[in-house]
Length: 409
Image (cartoon, rainbow, N blue to C red; front, side):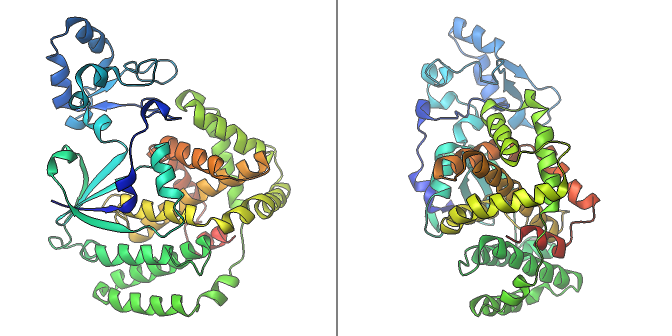
């Protein structure tokens, strides 16, 4: 089986008990049916009795990969975690007794045509460092690999040659050019996202005209425009819009009130973000915009302009891992997939600006902790992301001109 993966995957090794945010805490841990049955047949009666108390059947689930789940303690930690932050199941019986979820994480698998695509989740701190901190453009390798390692945990399956859906037929071309735009370093990362929006909008026009076979021609046009900086005047004419950021921050502050479902690491970050903006429910819009602009110019921009590879790598990894432009369900339009990626970016940027204000600086450690914790808590919470998306949609702000004004640095 051929595997397509970013080169950073070759370097990943779990650091076990040295990890500052173990994957055995902070979220629900599912157990597949096959592993659950294996646990029922354990011969060590004492261990089996303890395990039986700490694994619960999910009778509502119809998915065999989510057949059961591990009991969590009051600190949202797996009850099978040892004092040394190692898995008691693995210590006793070896890696083969781990559930699919535990054995594969933080790896992610999708199948596109004849390739298994392997990527890393930045909700893992060590993976986040590998993905985000490399100053070079993210590159990909194709290798032969045994199918055994995947444990049948393939997420999405896309067949570009066996579909009547035009966007799927042109999946490879659209995704590759999306990555090309995101890695066009002659533009700022926000400008690249705006240009990507222009590209997605033009593709939507081709789709509506049933002319998506012209996507190659469209890419050549955009490639020429990118190379010759023809977007500069258009980008300069876009007005900035900080007011909508206030609505985003209001959603984040509300998250603080739901602390029972948030791990302590991310909760700490949320408090620092809100404190950094000196935000509360009575904040005056004009005062907030003035403070946001000041913080952005004083702490965020100076650091990020020298380290834009961090957010570039985040977005490129998002595109690959989530099979953009098919990140959402198949009924979602290309432009909706684009808007959802922008929502991720804007939320992250808001977190980082608030933290920059709180600490009066940005550095690698602050950024890794923030992005990793955000990924672990928010990216796995589809309902929260939907709330943010719905907020923009409700206010009729899901228009490219409006999104561009929010993205404008």
